Image (tube, rainbow, N blue to C red; front, side, top):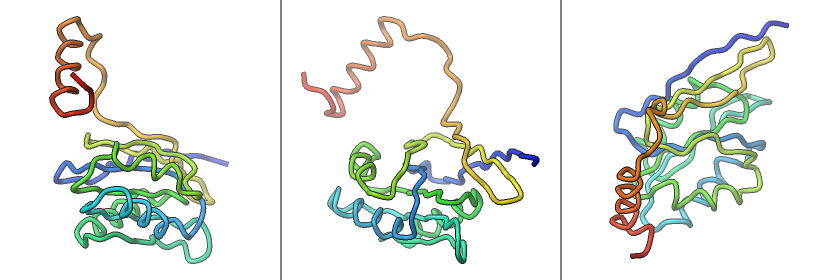
Amino acid sequence: MAVETELVPIRNPDGLNVILGQTHFIRTAEDVHEALVTSVPGIRFGVAFCEASGPCLVRVEGNDEGLKALAAENALQVGAGHFFIVFLKEAFPINVLRALREVPEVVSLYAATANPVDVVVAVTPKGRGVLGVVDGERAKGIETAKDREDRIAFLRKIGYKLG
């Protein structure tokens, strides 16, 4: 049986934060919705989930019509069974990842990023599956002492570390 690969770029024209993952049940869209809306007051999001059996539809939930449409469009392009995608506004992945990991259907998370991201998809006669993602650019070197100081200063500036 032959396996082909396809690179599917995630369309993200506004550079939004996006979370990509694998799940296992039709309840996913609703449960992810509930996890997100209860994680951060005022969060705006769209989530889309690709069914892997039955009608094999892209199921869509969220509280922002534009983000729901963007998630649905990207999920359909990836087209892999049990794949899900979330686009966020008014929150960052770090604010919701713990809640997403605790959703019983979530099997794994591939990426949480605002970088350009491509999904590597395996294509077989049975269907499509995500092999992994390419998140952002290639590493350009190893941080220097100055780079480390800048990183630490940035984390303190945005309130993620004390001091």
